[in-house]
Amino acid sequence: MYLLTAQQDPYVTAGHADDLAAALLAKGVSVTTETVPGSQSGGHLLTDVTKPKTLAWIRAHTSSPAPPAHQSADPPLAVHPNHRRTVPNDAPPAARLFLRPTAETPIETTHAYGEHARQQLDAYYQPGSQPQPALIVVHGGHWYEGDKQEWAATARWFAGQGYATFSINYRLNTDAPWPAQRDDVNSAITWIRQNATTFAIDPNRIVMLGSSAGGHLAAMAGTHANGTDLLRGVVALSPVADPNLGYTTGQTEGATAAQVKLRDHATLLTRCSPDPSSASCTSQWTDTTAKHHASTGDTPMYLIHSQQDFVPATHSTQLCEALTQAHVPCTTETTTGSHHGGALFQVPGLRDKVLTWLKAHD
Image (cartoon, rainbow, N blue to C red; front, side):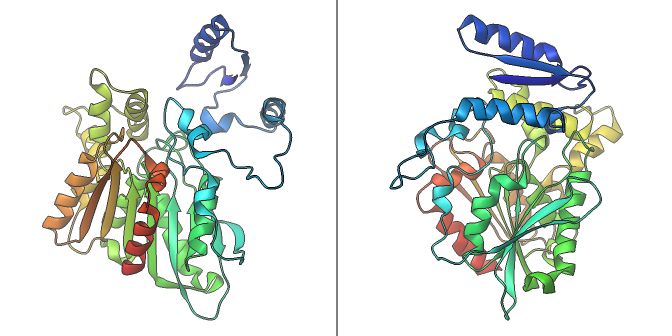
């Protein structure tokens, strides 16, 4: 294991890495630790200095003979790295689930929709004379991590189903507090609409797919003002529709590592712990909760969880109740198992159900 920290990281001190390294070494596990100057945290630790070192370590620990020509280089689903993480990632499983059914290859380009380094999107689209619908994909990662590239295979698959697909990044909670993340998603929607001709899309036929924290942002986009002014439909996989609920779940005895992480990063997102005595803090937490924004004219939604999802379906059932009261169509579904976020696409038939729902609403 390679553990990289910064000396003045304000969120995760180097002591975390030291304790983990000591425990791993005691078990005979090879560990490399490095502490660099500065106060970077998370993905910001990857600088021009640390990137080559990180890449060299990864290559040294992943080099292996190429698989025979008749075998797929993708790992079997059962041993995909995402499934071994203590804290689940929201990204989809192995790319083989999203192999395109045609030989056509979409155009792939990257664009900035704002001035911040995180305000970028990847576009996957087929040129054509007829405007096509657009799908915006919003990654998750506790608002703290994650990247648009994690959803590249999914984006290519949807591009093969007739959607110009846009996988977006947004400012993380280490970059800016709420509501910067919602603002970025709305800015990305506006940018895509303004550039509809470039991508041969119909600006009035835009739908959104979000996962985990990205599902929260998708739900927030769909309930912001009149959601249907911007989006025709929202599909959210394991959406953290109520960060306050995520906080209280993470506070309970027996909370999982993922739920504790969600609690901590919801706190970082709002820059305060829920405090009824603080009007400004209460307002911030209320503003992050999608059900408090539900109103007539919002975007229809399809919200999906698994039975043992660390983000329970209560997040979505409460949002759906609020939307239904506002006469907005909303559907929830709970699958078997413990899949979270993009891993829900492992559930047989679910990907096609999502596609069918999107096509009915775009």
